[in-house]
Image 1 (cartoon, helix red, strand yellow):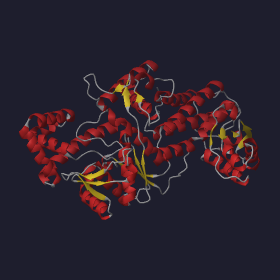
Image 2 (cartoon, one colour):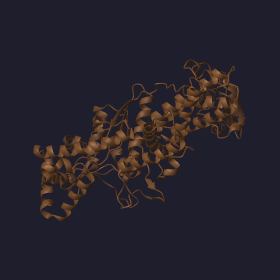
Image 3 (spheres, one colour):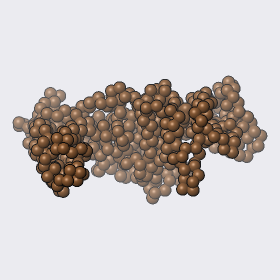
Image 4 (cartoon, one colour):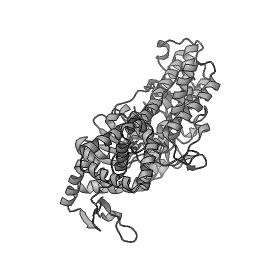
Length: 564
C-alpha cells in the first residue's frame, strides 16, 4: 500500500469539501516534532479562498477521514497539516516487503548501457549500465512489462577499420580478439600510418554498407567477440542484460531510407549544403538561427538522429511501448530534445512518453577524469577486480573466522555491491567522486552497511535459535523505536513508485539506509531475544526488516550475505 498516496487522496477530498481546488502535497515530515507526514497545500488554496492558511488547514483536518490511519493531526507552522500515523495502523500494515502490482498492463522500454563495441567497456559505461538496471528491476518489481534495449554502437566507419584489420590478421584472429583494446589500438595505428591499409578500410566500409556477405561475416565475428567481453562484465556486475536485449545501431539500417522518405513526405526535410535536415523553430538560438537536425549527410551517410528516429519507430510501433526511458549521459541532452521534438512532429512517438533520464560523470579522487596511471581510461574489469580485492581485506578484518572460500564469495558480493551502491545512492543528475574508503565503509549510507545490517539479523536468528514461526507473527508497537521502524517498513511501496516514476534509484537507497538506521536504533533499545510478551512481535519486525533490505537491495541489483 502506498501510504503517501492514500493520505494525499484523503486530504485532497477534504480540501475539495472545504471548497478549494488544488492538491495537498504530502511528504515525510522534515522534523520529528511535525509528526510523520506533512501536507502544505493549504497555503496556496487559502489565498484563493481569501482565508487564513491555518484556518483552512484546520478545516481540512476536520473534514478529512483519517481516523483509521492517523493518531494525531494538527496544524503547524504557517499552515501545514502535520500527521502522526497510529501504532494500530502500523501493526496491521504489510511490513515484510510486500509490493502492490501497480504497473500491470504498462510496457516500458529502457535504453541503457549501450557500449561502443569497437573496444572494451570502461568506467564511462558504468553509470548507464547500473542505473538502467536498477530502474528496470524496480519497474519489474511493480509488475510493469519491461523491455530492455541495449543500443550498442556496432556500425559505422570505425568498424570498416576493424574488419579490414581482422581480415589481415587471418588465422591468428581468435588470439588477437582476446584483447580488444590492443586490437583496436593496432587497427587505429595502421589506419593513421599505412595509406594502403586506410584505402582498404574505406573499401570495407562501402562493402559493409552494401551488404557484402563475406565482409558481414567478418563483422559479425568481431561483434560476437566484443559482446562476449561485454557479457562477462554484465555477469560480473550482476546486471540483468543478456544477449537477447542487444538491439544495436545496425539493426535499424534497413529502415533508415524509410525514415527519410516519411520525413520528406510530411514536408519536414530541407536541403542545406547538400545535407538533408529538419529545422524546428523551437531550436532557434539567440542569434536567430535554428540548429538543424541533420538526418542525412551530403555524402549519403546517416547520423545518430537517423538511427534514433528509426529506434523510436521500432520501440513504439513494434514493441508497443507506453514509456521509453533513455538512461544516457547528460551531455546528450540537446540531442534528445531534438529527437523527441522531431519524433512527435513526425508522429513516430504516437502516445508514448519519451524520457531522457540523464546522469553526470564519475570522477576519480581529486575531481579528475577516471583513468589508469598511464592516462588511459580505466577498463571496467580492472575497476571491479580492485573492488573485490579491497573488499576481501575489509571482510577478513571484520570476520577472520570465515573460510577462504566463503571469504572470497563474500568479498565478491560486497565489493561489486559497494561499487554499484556508491553510484546508485547519488542523485544521478550530479557528477560524483569515486572514493574507495567511503564506498567500502561499514558506517554510513553504503552497501556494506546495509549488507551488515541484514547479516546482523541473520546472526541474531541463529544465536537465538529462532524458528520460522516465531518471526512471522503479529506486530505490537510499544516504543517510539518500534513505531519508527514499522512506519519506515510501511513506506516501501511509496518509495518504489517514486523510483519508477522518476528513474531515480537514489530514493530507494536513501529509503533502505533509513530502514537500516532505524533498525539499528530499535536493536539497541528494544530487547529482542529475551522471553516475554514482546519477543514474537520484535522478531517479526526483524524478519520484516531483513526481507525489505534483501528485496530492496535486490531491486538495485545487489546481493545480501548471511555472514560478514
